Amino acid sequence: MKEKKTNLLQVLARRALLVALDAAIVAFSFYFALLLRADGAVEASWWPHNRALLYANLPWIVAVYLLSFLAGRLYTILWKYAGERDLIRLAGMIAVPTGIVYLVNRCFIHGVLFNSANAMAAVLIFLFIGGSRLAWRLFLNHPLGERLRGNASKDPNRPVMIVGAGEAGAWAINVCKTNTSYGHVILAVDDDPIKLGQTIHGVPVRGTLEEIPDLCTRYNIHTIIVAIPTLKGNRLNHVIDLCVSTHCAVQMLSDPQLVGAGTPQQGAFRELNTADFLSREEVTLDTEKISGYLTGKTVLVTGGGGSIGSELCRQVMRFKPAKLLIFDIYENCAYELLMELQQKYGRDVPVTVLVGSIRDKARLDEVFETYHPTVVFHAAAHKHVPLMEISPAEAVKNNVFGTKNLLTSASEHGVERLVQLSTDKAVNPTSVMGCTKRLCEMLIQTFAGNTDMKCVAVRFGNVLGSHGSVIPLFEAQIKKGGPVTLTDANIERYFMTIPEAAQLVLQAGALAESGSIYVLDMGEPVKIMDLAKQLIRFYGYEPGVNMDIKIVGLRPGEKLYEELMMDEEQDKMRRTVHNKIFVAPPRNIDLGEFYQQLQELSAAAEHNDDSVVEQLTKMVPTFTPTRENLKL
Image 1 (cartoon, helix red, strand yellow):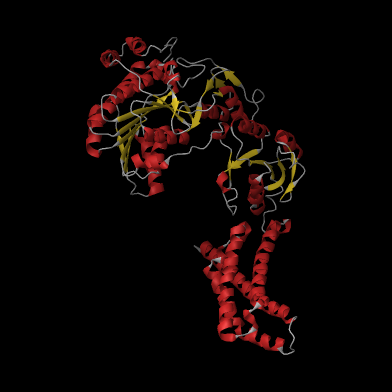
Image 2 (cartoon, rainbow, N blue to C red; image 1 turned 45 degrees about the vertical axis):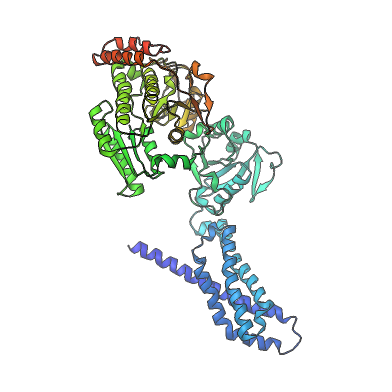
């Protein structure tokens, strides 16, 4: 409490000092303007008369200016971070009292103050007040000012390199100059030959991007800030590789939209994270269409406590549903998500956590009868490939018949739209998990053709950072000192970030051509070996030198390469109105044969029979099982 009181007194004292300074500036500016005006006076009595007139009116003139400054919140501007907008604000605060002085003098005083002296005074006030703040800002950034503020130990020990000498690079340099906690920028790099040898805000451009490692060594760089928002794809990956190889701290622009938006502020940069290795482009959503089917509706998310399900819940909340139902068998993650949403939106947030399993049809009916959801996102599933190879019956009971239960309950209770999350492992599957997800896609298509409910499946690849994905595994292995284990040196996977996947699922739900399978644009596949090496360098090690990479062989059910489309879908697949979503139209399924095979599969699964895998191969001809040499 005492500390807060002390801080408040310091703020008030600082503002009082600034008010006194500005009062003196206004008074001096009018006196000096009148003095300049006196040079052209013809009559000898001009100066004494108008000086006396100024002295008589100066108190109310100063008061009017100070009131304008207070009303315009001049004393709340942090001039250390001031920019063009703040100077425009200052000009406006000066223009108002200048006009008042002009009108009062013209109507009542009839003195020289209403002519050019008043205008000159306004210009002088702007120059003196703006100049005083600029001088203070320059002083704070001077080594002497930093020593007085106790920041001398920060700057010299944290030399910074800016990657990029364009608009974003100049902005980043300005941020660092106005906030020395980011470090001291000593050089920039850029591939534009015109910029080489030039300076930006006093910072020299000393080399190209390929010279990053050499320049970091030569100048003992501590932090690299990448400030080229246009870098994408392989080029961005290469630059990140160069930066990470230096073992310097690497930072990125936290929000490229801040560039050129005015005042630099805290949070301008963020630490490099594993998502940057994918260099995925930001998703643009058709918020109007998404709002059309989510806003004011009751939305159910199965598996809502999982990594993707929870992000779906976060994204759904952006569109203000009437109620969000988080349905999950694991209450801990669902509870943590509820706490997070309550902290963000308040304790009255319209979110309910429902514990239950999609394998329990009665529980699903109870949920639908009680809450009447109109939109369902189905993210609940067993998804770990090696584990489902060992327990195929459980994969079938949960993934296939749990989905069938959900579709049946939803259609019986008037659900308008159901979106099921699928996977690239459903394409020409080599695993039990992938095969069950392919059957889920087929279930979606059968229900779409026989109910009024819009049913779609959304197929995508690996999601960066989800439970069981390769990134957390690699990170854990690196933190323990290695080795980092790869199944194969040539293995490739499609990746996207969790928020990107969730956003595109919402967008696909807005399209909702019933019975269709939507395929998300995953970009180019990523070599897991390259990803492992990047992560190792990211944590300050060198692959093969102080961190080993061990090849352990493909696990049961794993592929060397993943696919996003089946052969029969290739010709029919088309891009939707959203450039990151493709759609395959519904395919014809023999319902009689399909439901007969489902009954046989159910019987095999209930008895935990070895014929489960055999039955799966009948239902999904493209399934190539690889269940051998399994160990519990």
